[in-house]
Amino acid sequence: MIRITIVLLLLLSQGLHAQTTAPTHWCGTQDGKVAWLEDYQANPMAFPRSVDTLYIPVTIHLVGTSGGAGYFGLPDLLDAFCTLNRDFENASIQFYLEGGISYIPNNTYYNHNFDTGSEMMAAYNVPNTINCYISNSPGENLCGYSAYNLGVALAKNCIQPDDHTWSHELGHYLSLPHPFYGWEGYDHDYGKPAPEQINGNLVERVDGLNCNVAGDGFCDTPPDYLNYRWPCNTLGESIVLQTDPLGVKLKSDGSFIMSYSSDECSYRFSDEQIAAMQANALSDKAEFLYDQTVRYPVYAGPVVPVFPGEGDTISTFNEIPFVWEPMPEATHYIVEYSINPNFNTAVFQFMTVGNSWVSSKLVKNKTYYWRLRPYNAQHTCEAYSDIHTFTTGDQTTTAVDDLIDGLSAVHILPNPVQSGAPLGLQISSERSMELNSVLMTPGGQVVGRYQWRLERGQTRVQIDTPGLPSGMYVLKLSTADGQMVRKVLIAR
Image 1 (cartoon, rainbow, N blue to C red):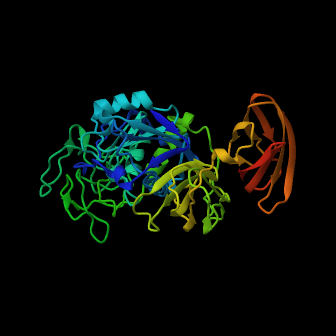
Image 2: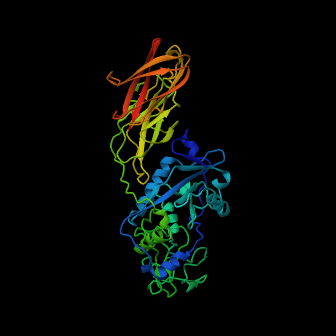
């Protein structure tokens, strides 16, 4: 497993979509009606309720090939997670991303069956979170499946921005069966009335008199016998006309996320389904509710670049820091840059915590376009920012000829440095000497003066940065033999 907080996610966008297959089935969940739900439906009032939104952690595992290809893209993940939380908003349940993204390069798990999927989940699951595995083909060409209290597997082709597969499978994880419960795998001639029972399960009738013991056991989800993927008409109902055991005609309601209706039809959970999911989270998964922090949406305003500035020409190219003013409520950013303004080829993409990133992937004498996508653990719906440009030069940042005689290396660590945190210098000296330094703004205003005694070998010193606003600074170092300058970035 590769767990990251800052990582190069892709070089060419085509690489993320290699070796995909179209799923031939939809949901492969085998749990049926779990024991917890049977106890709940026997006495719903005995279970806890909440008037507040419940926040549930989700751990994301992206599964690729053994060679490290085929991972679901991070922007696609943010879009899918946005849809997931929108689907659950009316249920007063919201999910948040816990920890870093887990990357699993494994051919066996990339296209897996239920046995290898269980093996994968046993090996990589993080406790007290809902573990979601996104691969090419989970469970033999399925769109997804849920293993109750173990994890959820999803096909990357089935969780596009308007798909509800992820919501469907998390509904299962929170105890919900299909509205057509009992009909799974049953081959029926819909021109004939439904039987009274299927495999020992009562078939729900239109009159609703057996609704609490037949089908999914929820009385506000009408009878539904369709166990295959089906489209809806303009009223949101199934086109296929069915007949209940008493000979009454019916059409399935396509609005329910837990049905097998097409994605353009489904959008909601019923009130009784919502009550069951909340009770399940509050009782069977109470240990998941350890962080009920309210996270607010990211402010959708313009990005203010600190460095490179708009239209800047930078003399160097090998190590370019990207720094921008932090956006309210954003904790993470996707940074993208490309030589094409439409970002359709040769896109370099990074995920970073905080409002800075240093790239060593740039080419000299090129004009680049860069943009950001801010998000936080819960709110991932924000679009990309406006686009900024800069041009690189042909010099390297670590040119040897700008070192002072007697110094063999000067490293600034970290660079950028968070405002208020100490800035470290690691200096290699060939002999003992006095070193003076001045920290200045680009306009020449001195914000700090320092003096150190260097001994032969390696010396580590620190510069405090309390109260300094984020931005670009110049550090001038001087000895009796000369002087040199280094750029320093302070990030908020």
